[in-house]
Length: 535
View 1 (cartoon, rainbow, N blue to C red):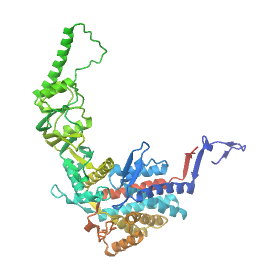
View 2: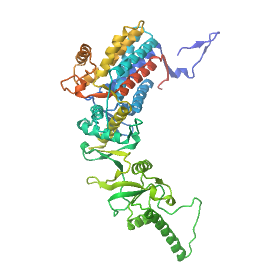
View 3: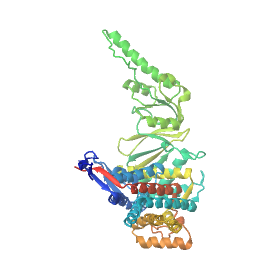
View 4: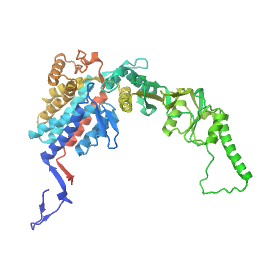
Protein backbone atom coordinates (compact mmCIF):
# COMPACT_ATOMS: atom_id res chain seq x y z
CA UNK A 1 0.00 0.00 0.00
CA UNK A 2 1.19 3.52 -0.71
CA UNK A 3 1.81 5.52 2.43
CA UNK A 4 0.63 9.13 2.59
CA UNK A 5 2.58 11.83 4.47
CA UNK A 6 1.27 15.03 6.03
CA UNK A 7 3.06 18.42 5.74
CA UNK A 8 5.47 17.54 8.57
CA UNK A 9 6.52 14.36 6.84
CA UNK A 10 4.71 12.02 9.26
CA UNK A 11 3.11 8.97 7.63
CA UNK A 12 -0.57 8.41 8.26
CA UNK A 13 -2.92 5.58 7.41
CA UNK A 14 -5.75 5.97 4.92
CA UNK A 15 -7.10 2.44 4.82
CA UNK A 16 -7.96 0.59 7.97
CA UNK A 17 -5.54 -2.28 8.69
CA UNK A 18 -3.85 -1.61 5.40
CA UNK A 19 -0.87 -3.84 6.09
CA UNK A 20 -3.27 -6.80 6.08
CA UNK A 21 -4.76 -6.00 2.68
CA UNK A 22 -3.36 -6.73 -0.76
CA UNK A 23 -3.89 -4.29 -3.55
CA UNK A 24 -3.62 -4.62 -7.32
CA UNK A 25 -3.69 -1.51 -9.47
CA UNK A 26 -3.86 -0.56 -13.12
CA UNK A 27 -2.88 -3.08 -15.76
CA UNK A 28 -1.91 -5.64 -13.12
CA UNK A 29 -5.44 -5.66 -11.73
CA UNK A 30 -6.99 -5.99 -15.18
CA UNK A 31 -4.71 -8.87 -16.11
CA UNK A 32 -5.42 -10.70 -12.87
CA UNK A 33 -9.16 -10.27 -13.41
CA UNK A 34 -8.97 -11.40 -17.02
CA UNK A 35 -7.00 -14.50 -16.15
CA UNK A 36 -9.59 -15.40 -13.48
CA UNK A 37 -12.42 -15.05 -16.01
CA UNK A 38 -10.50 -17.06 -18.60
CA UNK A 39 -9.86 -19.85 -16.09
CA UNK A 40 -13.58 -20.29 -15.49
CA UNK A 41 -14.33 -20.24 -19.22
CA UNK A 42 -11.64 -22.85 -19.84
CA UNK A 43 -13.38 -25.29 -17.51
CA UNK A 44 -16.64 -25.01 -19.43
CA UNK A 45 -15.07 -25.00 -22.88
CA UNK A 46 -14.80 -28.78 -23.04
CA UNK A 47 -18.47 -29.30 -22.19
CA UNK A 48 -19.80 -27.34 -25.17
CA UNK A 49 -21.68 -29.04 -27.99
CA UNK A 50 -22.97 -32.54 -28.72
CA UNK A 51 -19.54 -34.10 -28.17
CA UNK A 52 -18.91 -32.09 -25.00
CA UNK A 53 -17.73 -33.88 -21.87
CA UNK A 54 -19.51 -34.00 -18.51
CA UNK A 55 -18.08 -32.71 -15.25
CA UNK A 56 -18.19 -34.47 -11.91
CA UNK A 57 -18.51 -32.24 -8.87
CA UNK A 58 -18.36 -33.30 -5.25
CA UNK A 59 -19.96 -31.09 -2.66
CA UNK A 60 -18.41 -30.64 0.82
CA UNK A 61 -20.85 -33.16 2.32
CA UNK A 62 -19.99 -35.83 -0.24
CA UNK A 63 -22.89 -35.52 -2.70
CA UNK A 64 -21.73 -36.16 -6.25
CA UNK A 65 -23.21 -34.30 -9.22
CA UNK A 66 -22.46 -35.28 -12.80
CA UNK A 67 -23.62 -32.67 -15.25
CA UNK A 68 -23.16 -30.99 -18.60
CA UNK A 69 -25.23 -27.91 -17.80
CA UNK A 70 -23.03 -24.79 -17.55
CA UNK A 71 -25.10 -23.09 -14.87
CA UNK A 72 -25.11 -26.19 -12.64
CA UNK A 73 -21.33 -26.72 -13.00
CA UNK A 74 -20.60 -23.15 -11.94
CA UNK A 75 -23.19 -23.14 -9.13
CA UNK A 76 -21.67 -26.25 -7.57
CA UNK A 77 -18.05 -25.25 -8.12
CA UNK A 78 -17.74 -23.11 -5.00
CA UNK A 79 -15.76 -20.29 -6.59
CA UNK A 80 -13.73 -17.98 -4.38
CA UNK A 81 -12.43 -15.30 -6.73
CA UNK A 82 -14.70 -12.23 -7.14
CA UNK A 83 -14.32 -12.08 -10.93
CA UNK A 84 -15.00 -15.80 -11.25
CA UNK A 85 -18.16 -15.16 -9.21
CA UNK A 86 -19.23 -12.68 -11.88
CA UNK A 87 -18.96 -15.48 -14.44
CA UNK A 88 -21.12 -17.69 -12.23
CA UNK A 89 -23.71 -14.90 -12.04
CA UNK A 90 -23.52 -14.56 -15.80
CA UNK A 91 -24.44 -18.16 -16.48
CA UNK A 92 -27.11 -18.00 -13.77
CA UNK A 93 -28.80 -15.00 -15.37
CA UNK A 94 -28.77 -16.78 -18.76
CA UNK A 95 -30.33 -19.78 -17.02
CA UNK A 96 -33.08 -17.71 -15.38
CA UNK A 97 -33.93 -15.71 -18.48
CA UNK A 98 -33.54 -18.25 -21.29
CA UNK A 99 -32.84 -21.58 -19.61
CA UNK A 100 -30.48 -22.77 -22.32
CA UNK A 101 -27.07 -21.68 -23.64
CA UNK A 102 -25.47 -21.36 -20.21
CA UNK A 103 -22.19 -22.92 -21.35
CA UNK A 104 -21.91 -20.89 -24.55
CA UNK A 105 -22.34 -17.57 -22.78
CA UNK A 106 -19.38 -18.22 -20.46
CA UNK A 107 -17.19 -19.48 -23.32
CA UNK A 108 -17.99 -16.30 -25.27
CA UNK A 109 -17.21 -14.06 -22.28
CA UNK A 110 -13.90 -15.89 -21.78
CA UNK A 111 -12.97 -15.34 -25.44
CA UNK A 112 -13.85 -11.63 -25.22
CA UNK A 113 -11.59 -11.28 -22.17
CA UNK A 114 -8.76 -13.06 -23.96
CA UNK A 115 -9.01 -10.68 -26.92
CA UNK A 116 -9.19 -7.69 -24.56
CA UNK A 117 -5.95 -8.79 -22.91
CA UNK A 118 -4.11 -8.55 -26.23
CA UNK A 119 -5.49 -5.08 -26.86
CA UNK A 120 -4.51 -3.92 -23.36
CA UNK A 121 -0.96 -5.08 -24.03
CA UNK A 122 -0.91 -2.87 -27.09
CA UNK A 123 -1.71 0.04 -24.82
CA UNK A 124 -5.33 0.62 -25.77
CA UNK A 125 -7.40 2.13 -22.97
CA UNK A 126 -9.90 -0.33 -21.39
CA UNK A 127 -12.80 2.11 -21.77
CA UNK A 128 -12.17 2.32 -25.51
CA UNK A 129 -12.17 -1.48 -25.71
CA UNK A 130 -15.45 -1.61 -23.77
CA UNK A 131 -17.02 0.94 -26.11
CA UNK A 132 -15.85 -0.97 -29.16
CA UNK A 133 -17.32 -4.19 -27.74
CA UNK A 134 -20.61 -2.41 -27.13
CA UNK A 135 -20.79 -1.24 -30.76
CA UNK A 136 -19.84 -4.69 -32.03
CA UNK A 137 -22.48 -6.42 -29.89
CA UNK A 138 -25.12 -4.13 -31.36
CA UNK A 139 -24.01 -5.04 -34.89
CA UNK A 140 -24.06 -8.76 -34.01
CA UNK A 141 -27.53 -8.64 -32.43
CA UNK A 142 -28.95 -6.77 -35.43
CA UNK A 143 -27.33 -9.26 -37.79
CA UNK A 144 -28.93 -12.13 -35.84
CA UNK A 145 -32.35 -10.50 -36.42
CA UNK A 146 -31.43 -10.31 -40.09
CA UNK A 147 -30.53 -14.01 -40.51
CA UNK A 148 -33.28 -15.35 -38.22
CA UNK A 149 -36.26 -17.20 -39.62
CA UNK A 150 -39.83 -17.31 -38.39
CA UNK A 151 -41.23 -20.64 -37.47
CA UNK A 152 -44.89 -21.46 -37.86
CA UNK A 153 -46.26 -24.17 -35.64
CA UNK A 154 -49.73 -25.12 -34.56
CA UNK A 155 -51.32 -27.76 -32.36
CA UNK A 156 -51.11 -30.13 -35.35
CA UNK A 157 -47.65 -29.19 -36.65
CA UNK A 158 -45.24 -29.70 -33.76
CA UNK A 159 -42.20 -30.74 -35.81
CA UNK A 160 -40.40 -27.34 -35.66
CA UNK A 161 -40.67 -27.25 -31.86
CA UNK A 162 -39.52 -30.86 -31.52
CA UNK A 163 -36.49 -30.26 -33.77
CA UNK A 164 -35.38 -27.26 -31.68
CA UNK A 165 -35.75 -29.19 -28.43
CA UNK A 166 -33.74 -32.03 -29.95
CA UNK A 167 -30.89 -29.61 -30.64
CA UNK A 168 -30.86 -28.64 -26.97
CA UNK A 169 -30.94 -32.25 -25.79
CA UNK A 170 -28.25 -33.43 -28.21
CA UNK A 171 -25.46 -32.09 -25.97
CA UNK A 172 -26.84 -33.81 -22.88
CA UNK A 173 -26.61 -37.31 -21.48
CA UNK A 174 -30.09 -38.17 -22.81
CA UNK A 175 -29.10 -37.72 -26.45
CA UNK A 176 -29.74 -41.36 -27.38
CA UNK A 177 -33.46 -40.96 -26.81
CA UNK A 178 -33.64 -37.26 -27.55
CA UNK A 179 -36.50 -37.63 -30.04
CA UNK A 180 -38.83 -39.15 -27.43
CA UNK A 181 -37.74 -36.65 -24.76
CA UNK A 182 -38.22 -33.68 -27.09
CA UNK A 183 -41.73 -34.85 -27.98
CA UNK A 184 -42.59 -35.23 -24.29
CA UNK A 185 -41.31 -31.72 -23.53
CA UNK A 186 -43.19 -30.12 -26.42
CA UNK A 187 -46.45 -31.85 -25.55
CA UNK A 188 -46.06 -30.86 -21.90
CA UNK A 189 -45.42 -27.20 -22.75
CA UNK A 190 -48.29 -27.03 -25.22
CA UNK A 191 -50.74 -28.55 -22.77
CA UNK A 192 -50.05 -25.82 -20.19
CA UNK A 193 -49.38 -22.97 -22.66
CA UNK A 194 -51.68 -20.03 -23.10
CA UNK A 195 -51.22 -19.53 -26.85
CA UNK A 196 -53.24 -16.30 -27.04
CA UNK A 197 -51.10 -14.56 -24.43
CA UNK A 198 -48.02 -16.41 -25.67
CA UNK A 199 -47.22 -17.34 -22.12
CA UNK A 200 -46.23 -20.59 -20.43
CA UNK A 201 -46.23 -21.20 -16.70
CA UNK A 202 -43.57 -23.85 -16.14
CA UNK A 203 -44.71 -24.34 -12.53
CA UNK A 204 -47.63 -26.35 -13.88
CA UNK A 205 -45.23 -28.94 -15.29
CA UNK A 206 -44.04 -31.16 -12.50
CA UNK A 207 -40.89 -33.16 -13.18
CA UNK A 208 -40.69 -36.28 -11.03
CA UNK A 209 -38.08 -39.02 -11.08
CA UNK A 210 -37.86 -42.56 -9.73
CA UNK A 211 -34.75 -44.72 -9.83
CA UNK A 212 -35.23 -47.92 -11.81
CA UNK A 213 -36.32 -48.79 -15.31
CA UNK A 214 -34.56 -47.24 -18.27
CA UNK A 215 -34.53 -43.76 -19.79
CA UNK A 216 -36.90 -44.88 -22.54
CA UNK A 217 -39.58 -45.55 -19.90
CA UNK A 218 -39.88 -41.82 -19.23
CA UNK A 219 -43.51 -40.81 -19.78
CA UNK A 220 -45.77 -37.79 -19.84
CA UNK A 221 -48.80 -38.04 -17.57
CA UNK A 222 -51.75 -35.75 -18.25
CA UNK A 223 -52.38 -35.31 -14.58
CA UNK A 224 -50.44 -35.40 -11.34
CA UNK A 225 -48.35 -38.06 -9.63
CA UNK A 226 -48.04 -38.00 -5.86
CA UNK A 227 -45.33 -39.93 -4.09
CA UNK A 228 -47.77 -41.37 -1.54
CA UNK A 229 -50.02 -44.39 -1.24
CA UNK A 230 -53.47 -45.02 0.20
CA UNK A 231 -53.55 -44.62 3.96
CA UNK A 232 -54.88 -48.14 4.55
CA UNK A 233 -53.53 -51.20 2.73
CA UNK A 234 -57.05 -52.59 2.13
CA UNK A 235 -58.43 -49.53 0.37
CA UNK A 236 -59.18 -49.90 -3.35
CA UNK A 237 -56.12 -49.31 -5.56
CA UNK A 238 -58.04 -47.91 -8.51
CA UNK A 239 -60.92 -45.45 -8.55
CA UNK A 240 -62.68 -44.42 -11.75
CA UNK A 241 -64.55 -41.12 -12.11
CA UNK A 242 -63.17 -40.03 -8.78
CA UNK A 243 -64.63 -37.06 -6.94
CA UNK A 244 -61.83 -35.74 -4.81
CA UNK A 245 -62.15 -33.80 -1.56
CA UNK A 246 -58.94 -31.80 -1.04
CA UNK A 247 -58.61 -31.00 2.66
CA UNK A 248 -56.13 -29.02 4.72
CA UNK A 249 -57.75 -29.91 8.05
CA UNK A 250 -56.61 -32.94 10.06
CA UNK A 251 -58.81 -35.94 10.80
CA UNK A 252 -58.31 -35.53 14.52
CA UNK A 253 -60.32 -34.22 17.47
CA UNK A 254 -59.66 -30.50 17.94
CA UNK A 255 -57.02 -29.52 20.45
CA UNK A 256 -57.82 -26.35 22.41
CA UNK A 257 -55.09 -23.74 22.31
CA UNK A 258 -55.26 -23.22 26.09
CA UNK A 259 -53.60 -25.38 28.72
CA UNK A 260 -56.20 -27.79 30.04
CA UNK A 261 -56.56 -30.87 32.17
CA UNK A 262 -59.43 -33.32 32.10
CA UNK A 263 -60.20 -35.03 35.39
CA UNK A 264 -61.78 -38.42 34.92
CA UNK A 265 -62.74 -40.17 38.12
CA UNK A 266 -65.31 -42.70 36.97
CA UNK A 267 -65.50 -45.27 34.20
CA UNK A 268 -68.68 -43.63 32.87
CA UNK A 269 -66.92 -40.34 32.26
CA UNK A 270 -64.21 -42.15 30.36
CA UNK A 271 -66.80 -43.93 28.24
CA UNK A 272 -68.53 -40.62 27.49
CA UNK A 273 -65.25 -39.06 26.42
CA UNK A 274 -64.51 -42.03 24.22
CA UNK A 275 -67.96 -41.89 22.58
CA UNK A 276 -67.60 -38.17 22.06
CA UNK A 277 -64.35 -38.76 20.21
CA UNK A 278 -65.86 -41.50 18.11
CA UNK A 279 -68.82 -39.31 17.23
CA UNK A 280 -66.36 -36.66 16.14
CA UNK A 281 -64.69 -38.94 13.65
CA UNK A 282 -68.06 -40.26 12.53
CA UNK A 283 -69.23 -36.73 11.72
CA UNK A 284 -66.07 -35.96 9.78
CA UNK A 285 -66.26 -39.06 7.63
CA UNK A 286 -70.00 -38.60 7.19
CA UNK A 287 -69.52 -35.05 5.92
CA UNK A 288 -67.10 -36.30 3.30
CA UNK A 289 -69.55 -39.04 2.28
CA UNK A 290 -72.52 -36.63 2.19
CA UNK A 291 -71.03 -34.34 -0.42
CA UNK A 292 -70.35 -37.36 -2.62
CA UNK A 293 -66.55 -37.61 -2.35
CA UNK A 294 -65.02 -40.91 -3.44
CA UNK A 295 -61.44 -40.01 -2.50
CA UNK A 296 -60.05 -37.80 0.26
CA UNK A 297 -56.65 -36.16 -0.11
CA UNK A 298 -55.49 -34.61 3.14
CA UNK A 299 -52.54 -32.41 3.98
CA UNK A 300 -52.28 -33.74 7.54
CA UNK A 301 -52.38 -37.12 9.21
CA UNK A 302 -55.27 -39.22 10.47
CA UNK A 303 -55.80 -40.89 13.76
CA UNK A 304 -55.83 -44.67 13.48
CA UNK A 305 -59.44 -44.48 14.49
CA UNK A 306 -60.25 -42.18 11.57
CA UNK A 307 -58.29 -44.40 9.21
CA UNK A 308 -60.24 -47.44 10.36
CA UNK A 309 -63.56 -45.59 9.93
CA UNK A 310 -62.62 -44.36 6.45
CA UNK A 311 -61.76 -47.95 5.56
CA UNK A 312 -65.13 -49.17 6.92
CA UNK A 313 -67.13 -46.59 5.03
CA UNK A 314 -65.00 -47.45 1.95
CA UNK A 315 -63.81 -43.92 1.46
CA UNK A 316 -60.23 -44.19 0.18
CA UNK A 317 -57.89 -41.55 1.53
CA UNK A 318 -54.34 -40.26 1.09
CA UNK A 319 -52.55 -38.44 3.90
CA UNK A 320 -49.50 -36.18 4.32
CA UNK A 321 -49.66 -34.67 0.80
CA UNK A 322 -47.46 -31.58 0.45
CA UNK A 323 -48.87 -28.10 -0.10
CA UNK A 324 -47.44 -27.60 -3.60
CA UNK A 325 -48.81 -30.95 -4.71
CA UNK A 326 -52.21 -30.10 -3.26
CA UNK A 327 -52.29 -26.91 -5.31
CA UNK A 328 -51.35 -28.77 -8.48
CA UNK A 329 -54.01 -31.41 -7.80
CA UNK A 330 -56.56 -28.64 -7.28
CA UNK A 331 -55.57 -26.98 -10.58
CA UNK A 332 -55.63 -30.27 -12.48
CA UNK A 333 -58.94 -31.58 -11.14
CA UNK A 334 -60.71 -28.23 -10.95
CA UNK A 335 -61.35 -28.67 -7.23
CA UNK A 336 -61.04 -26.25 -4.34
CA UNK A 337 -58.82 -26.67 -1.30
CA UNK A 338 -61.10 -26.88 1.73
CA UNK A 339 -59.77 -25.66 5.10
CA UNK A 340 -62.72 -26.81 7.32
CA UNK A 341 -65.12 -29.73 7.24
CA UNK A 342 -68.05 -27.31 7.61
CA UNK A 343 -67.21 -25.77 4.26
CA UNK A 344 -67.30 -28.95 2.19
CA UNK A 345 -69.83 -28.65 -0.65
CA UNK A 346 -70.25 -30.78 -3.79
CA UNK A 347 -69.05 -27.87 -5.99
CA UNK A 348 -65.67 -27.85 -4.26
CA UNK A 349 -64.81 -31.42 -5.22
CA UNK A 350 -62.24 -32.04 -7.92
CA UNK A 351 -62.90 -34.59 -10.65
CA UNK A 352 -60.51 -37.07 -12.23
CA UNK A 353 -61.23 -39.84 -14.73
CA UNK A 354 -58.91 -42.30 -13.07
CA UNK A 355 -56.93 -42.44 -9.84
CA UNK A 356 -54.66 -45.45 -9.53
CA UNK A 357 -51.88 -46.63 -7.28
CA UNK A 358 -48.85 -48.01 -9.08
CA UNK A 359 -45.95 -49.87 -7.52
CA UNK A 360 -42.48 -50.11 -9.00
CA UNK A 361 -40.26 -53.15 -9.32
CA UNK A 362 -39.68 -55.31 -6.27
CA UNK A 363 -39.39 -52.37 -3.88
CA UNK A 364 -42.24 -51.15 -1.75
CA UNK A 365 -42.32 -47.86 -3.64
CA UNK A 366 -45.82 -46.82 -4.60
CA UNK A 367 -47.13 -43.71 -6.33
CA UNK A 368 -50.58 -42.34 -6.95
CA UNK A 369 -51.46 -41.32 -10.47
CA UNK A 370 -54.32 -38.86 -10.88
CA UNK A 371 -55.17 -38.87 -14.58
CA UNK A 372 -57.77 -37.87 -17.20
CA UNK A 373 -58.57 -34.73 -15.27
CA UNK A 374 -61.22 -32.19 -16.15
CA UNK A 375 -58.69 -29.46 -16.70
CA UNK A 376 -55.44 -31.05 -17.79
CA UNK A 377 -53.55 -27.76 -17.40
CA UNK A 378 -51.17 -29.44 -14.99
CA UNK A 379 -49.02 -32.28 -16.29
CA UNK A 380 -46.22 -34.44 -14.93
CA UNK A 381 -43.11 -35.67 -16.68
CA UNK A 382 -42.13 -38.89 -14.97
CA UNK A 383 -38.49 -39.86 -15.48
CA UNK A 384 -36.98 -43.31 -15.00
CA UNK A 385 -33.27 -44.02 -15.06
CA UNK A 386 -30.54 -46.35 -13.86
CA UNK A 387 -29.32 -44.26 -10.94
CA UNK A 388 -29.94 -41.04 -9.07
CA UNK A 389 -27.36 -39.05 -11.00
CA UNK A 390 -28.83 -39.90 -14.38
CA UNK A 391 -32.27 -38.87 -13.14
CA UNK A 392 -30.99 -35.56 -11.76
CA UNK A 393 -29.14 -34.82 -14.99
CA UNK A 394 -32.21 -35.78 -17.06
CA UNK A 395 -34.28 -33.38 -14.97
CA UNK A 396 -31.83 -30.58 -15.78
CA UNK A 397 -31.83 -31.49 -19.48
CA UNK A 398 -35.62 -31.58 -19.58
CA UNK A 399 -35.75 -28.20 -17.83
CA UNK A 400 -33.55 -26.79 -20.62
CA UNK A 401 -35.78 -28.28 -23.30
CA UNK A 402 -38.95 -26.99 -21.62
CA UNK A 403 -37.43 -23.51 -21.50
CA UNK A 404 -36.57 -23.67 -25.20
CA UNK A 405 -40.11 -24.70 -26.10
CA UNK A 406 -41.44 -21.87 -23.94
CA UNK A 407 -39.13 -19.35 -25.63
CA UNK A 408 -40.29 -20.49 -29.05
CA UNK A 409 -43.91 -19.99 -28.05
CA UNK A 410 -43.04 -16.49 -26.83
CA UNK A 411 -40.99 -15.60 -29.88
CA UNK A 412 -40.97 -18.05 -32.77
CA UNK A 413 -37.79 -16.83 -34.51
CA UNK A 414 -34.87 -19.24 -34.82
CA UNK A 415 -31.28 -19.10 -35.99
CA UNK A 416 -29.25 -22.11 -37.06
CA UNK A 417 -26.95 -23.78 -34.56
CA UNK A 418 -23.64 -25.58 -34.85
CA UNK A 419 -21.70 -22.33 -34.56
CA UNK A 420 -23.21 -21.05 -37.84
CA UNK A 421 -24.89 -18.02 -36.22
CA UNK A 422 -21.68 -17.01 -34.44
CA UNK A 423 -19.64 -17.40 -37.63
CA UNK A 424 -22.14 -15.29 -39.60
CA UNK A 425 -22.07 -12.59 -36.90
CA UNK A 426 -18.29 -12.68 -36.84
CA UNK A 427 -18.16 -12.05 -40.61
CA UNK A 428 -20.73 -9.25 -40.32
CA UNK A 429 -18.86 -7.55 -37.44
CA UNK A 430 -15.53 -7.88 -39.27
CA UNK A 431 -17.02 -6.23 -42.37
CA UNK A 432 -18.61 -3.43 -40.36
CA UNK A 433 -15.43 -2.67 -38.40
CA UNK A 434 -13.86 -0.73 -41.30
CA UNK A 435 -16.60 1.89 -41.10
CA UNK A 436 -15.53 2.99 -37.62
CA UNK A 437 -12.58 5.40 -37.36
CA UNK A 438 -10.52 5.50 -34.19
CA UNK A 439 -9.24 2.94 -31.74
CA UNK A 440 -12.64 1.25 -31.36
CA UNK A 441 -12.04 -0.40 -34.72
CA UNK A 442 -9.47 -2.71 -33.08
CA UNK A 443 -11.95 -3.68 -30.38
CA UNK A 444 -14.66 -4.39 -32.95
CA UNK A 445 -12.27 -6.67 -34.86
CA UNK A 446 -11.32 -8.37 -31.59
CA UNK A 447 -15.04 -8.98 -30.93
CA UNK A 448 -15.31 -10.68 -34.32
CA UNK A 449 -12.37 -12.93 -33.41
CA UNK A 450 -13.92 -13.74 -30.05
CA UNK A 451 -17.18 -14.85 -31.68
CA UNK A 452 -15.16 -17.51 -33.48
CA UNK A 453 -14.35 -19.13 -30.13
CA UNK A 454 -17.71 -20.94 -29.99
CA UNK A 455 -17.44 -22.75 -33.36
CA UNK A 456 -13.77 -23.34 -32.60
CA UNK A 457 -14.59 -25.02 -29.26
CA UNK A 458 -17.29 -27.10 -31.00
CA UNK A 459 -14.78 -28.30 -33.60
CA UNK A 460 -12.16 -29.00 -30.93
CA UNK A 461 -14.57 -31.04 -28.79
CA UNK A 462 -15.66 -33.04 -31.84
CA UNK A 463 -12.06 -34.05 -32.56
CA UNK A 464 -11.79 -32.00 -35.76
CA UNK A 465 -8.91 -29.66 -36.65
CA UNK A 466 -10.28 -26.43 -35.13
CA UNK A 467 -8.56 -23.80 -37.25
CA UNK A 468 -8.90 -25.69 -40.54
CA UNK A 469 -12.57 -26.51 -39.97
CA UNK A 470 -13.45 -22.97 -38.94
CA UNK A 471 -11.69 -21.32 -41.87
CA UNK A 472 -13.37 -23.76 -44.28
CA UNK A 473 -16.82 -22.93 -42.84
CA UNK A 474 -16.10 -19.20 -42.93
CA UNK A 475 -14.96 -19.19 -46.54
CA UNK A 476 -17.98 -21.31 -47.49
CA UNK A 477 -20.33 -18.81 -45.78
CA UNK A 478 -18.72 -15.84 -47.53
CA UNK A 479 -18.52 -17.58 -50.92
CA UNK A 480 -22.15 -18.67 -51.02
CA UNK A 481 -23.43 -15.81 -48.85
CA UNK A 482 -25.34 -18.34 -46.82
CA UNK A 483 -25.37 -18.10 -42.98
CA UNK A 484 -26.48 -21.70 -42.48
CA UNK A 485 -23.09 -23.36 -42.65
CA UNK A 486 -21.74 -24.52 -39.30
CA UNK A 487 -19.46 -27.12 -37.76
CA UNK A 488 -20.41 -30.69 -38.61
CA UNK A 489 -19.98 -32.08 -35.08
CA UNK A 490 -21.76 -35.37 -35.60
CA UNK A 491 -19.89 -36.14 -38.83
CA UNK A 492 -23.05 -36.33 -40.91
CA UNK A 493 -21.17 -35.24 -44.00
CA UNK A 494 -22.85 -31.88 -44.60
CA UNK A 495 -22.08 -28.48 -43.13
CA UNK A 496 -25.53 -27.10 -43.86
CA UNK A 497 -27.33 -26.84 -40.53
CA UNK A 498 -30.69 -26.61 -42.29
CA UNK A 499 -30.27 -30.15 -43.55
CA UNK A 500 -29.02 -31.33 -40.18
CA UNK A 501 -32.01 -29.68 -38.44
CA UNK A 502 -29.89 -27.90 -35.84
CA UNK A 503 -31.85 -24.91 -34.57
CA UNK A 504 -31.48 -22.47 -31.69
CA UNK A 505 -33.82 -19.78 -30.46
CA UNK A 506 -33.08 -16.24 -31.58
CA UNK A 507 -33.72 -14.64 -28.18
CA UNK A 508 -31.35 -17.16 -26.56
CA UNK A 509 -28.49 -16.26 -28.92
CA UNK A 510 -29.09 -12.51 -28.60
CA UNK A 511 -29.19 -12.77 -24.83
CA UNK A 512 -25.87 -14.67 -24.87
CA UNK A 513 -24.10 -11.93 -26.82
CA UNK A 514 -25.60 -9.09 -24.77
CA UNK A 515 -24.95 -10.68 -21.38
CA UNK A 516 -21.37 -11.69 -22.23
CA UNK A 517 -20.59 -8.18 -23.49
CA UNK A 518 -22.04 -6.56 -20.37
CA UNK A 519 -19.99 -8.71 -18.01
CA UNK A 520 -16.77 -8.18 -19.97
CA UNK A 521 -17.33 -4.41 -19.99
CA UNK A 522 -17.77 -4.53 -16.25
CA UNK A 523 -14.58 -6.55 -15.73
CA UNK A 524 -12.56 -4.24 -18.02
CA UNK A 525 -13.57 -1.15 -16.09
CA UNK A 526 -12.07 -2.43 -12.84
CA UNK A 527 -8.57 -1.03 -12.33
CA UNK A 528 -8.03 -1.35 -8.60
CA UNK A 529 -8.65 -4.44 -6.50
CA UNK A 530 -8.36 -4.13 -2.72
CA UNK A 531 -8.84 -7.45 -0.98
CA UNK A 532 -8.11 -8.76 2.51
CA UNK A 533 -4.94 -10.85 2.48
CA UNK A 534 -5.08 -14.56 3.12
CA UNK A 535 -3.57 -14.81 6.57
